[in-house]
Image (cartoon, rainbow, N blue to C red; front, top):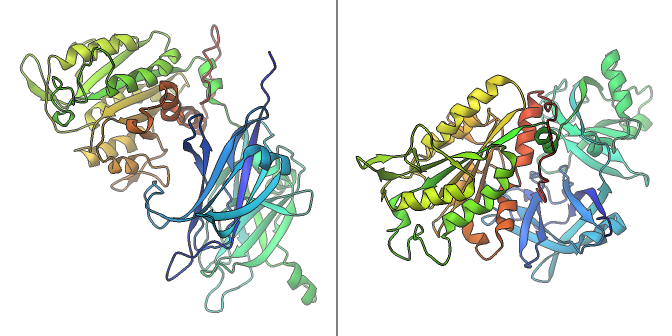
Length: 536
């Protein structure tokens, strides 16, 4: 059998001449990339950052994916003008899209095409591809500058930095943009992490250009000065404390005795190895799986065929389908395969009191089920004995798992991680309590997956699945994005594997992010390797 030819590539995207959809300013574009699946459906893979007030954006955030030589991988790049805080792009102005094959992009390295809306050209897009090299090292950088040139007539300057690779043809490839610091000639920018593969292709001696610009609202950002350097020289500059001259070539030509337009200092340049998800599970990290099922009255009378809890003898209902699809993947990463299975929103025997945290097997001292099939049996037995009620409160079950995750976090080892699967049919009644619980959980070894069952409006879930920005509860912000929401109806006609892949796609990243942020290395491997998390 021939070996599979797969290469990791990073795509960098630029657009020119975008439509202007904003009345008092310019569009705020974002580009989303979709991959066509085996059924011909476009599935979002990733998106860039939003660039404010710009019709000719160079997006700094690249998109990483696997390139298979032997496969036709159809891609679609769609650009939107984003003017709100929701993660959904359906309520944003569409600025055009472009379809191509990944092979076209890789073979040309730089692929340019028109953006179109219903056959009408509405701008241009360029996609630049490069093979990712450089292993799993990440560099943490912090910069400050002094004595920058004053560029604004009524103020000082509003400086920001852009880091770019220098390509062999002399062109630059933007890889990072810092925040803007208003009205300051001696700025200190926030620290940021960037992989060595993205920054310099893993080559410590590859040229990097750092440009300092004065931000302007009308998108005519003025160059203050720039410096060409290598990662090795950045490390040396940090060690020596010497500043780097920011030079403006045009000003240097005109001004006699010109020295610089400011001095850039490397306040921090630390390189660390980032351990992967497989590093952690191969070291023995247990993925502890917990299930929470919605038993509120809005699901409908389970004795009737239209109920979401109806037990059809010929076909499992949506709750069971989602549970099996996700659970069968997760159970392979837990050695004892004993999982807590909980319900919420029902009156339970014997007293028929409403509970928002009850074991499906009605055994509070041992709520565990052995394997996914035992959870299914416990669910089927439970639905025959409880009375569906309400309201839809999920915070108690999240807090239940938090108690275990807190204990694991105190061990200060990469040994335990918790995944809570919540299956629910509608809008949450305890949204504020749920947000507070998720913000707390974001600081623990824990993730939350929410699968929406039925045809309800799940708009509130977009706020919890904070793909753009951090979830907030009062004055507190989530440390990480730990929630993944998926409406089951979008996957009803597809195989369980497609649902599982989509639902679990973020888990490996969330696991490695939690442990790497805390400097926790994988434990020593014991016994055979765990199964391969194919496609995740």
